[in-house]
Amino acid sequence: MTGLELRTPRLLLRPWHASDDAEVAAALDIYRRDEVARWLGATPRPWPDLDYARARLARWESVFGETPGLGLWAVVPDGAAHPAGTVLLVRLPDADGAPTDDVEIGWHLHPDAWGHGYATEAAKALLEHAFGTLDLPCVNAVAYAGNAPSFAVMQRLGMAAQGSTDRWYGVTMQWWRIDRADWLRTHPGPLADPLPGPE
Image (cartoon, rainbow, N blue to C red; front, side, top):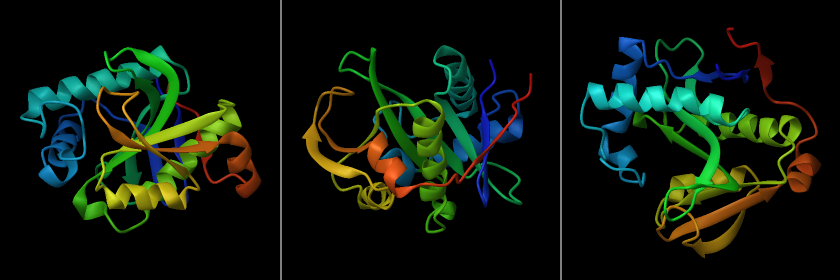
């Protein structure tokens, strides 16, 4: 099953393509960088090689078919040849890695794409999708202590800090959350336009 594509004023959000060699190389260039990988809990970090990157992208493509409406999107700025990063809306795993009913939003961008507001713009589009299309009651975000740039994005999204928690991923992280009612009260109009995905 293919994933939904979303268009914002400056970005196309679409599935990653594991069959595209240039796209695999672009993903490796993002996730091999310590300044990106240091904030991710997955191992190995950073990503070691192209084979690993291709396998990860293939896994990400499959997420769209497991839970309709959820997944990991490539963030492609207008005019860019390759994705600048990833934005995700997925089920949070418990300490043993089993998916829970709690949904997480997150973002990982190449350092060259930092400072342009792409993370906030892409995440707003996914929150709109989460609350306007999927009718989710709330969306969570988690990050390691010290990840000030991510905390700033969470604040710009209107998320509220909930303190630290170890209920997901089996590690202690800082937890932020936004409820559907709060989002709809502060975001009355659409940001992103859904585009029909390929069959």
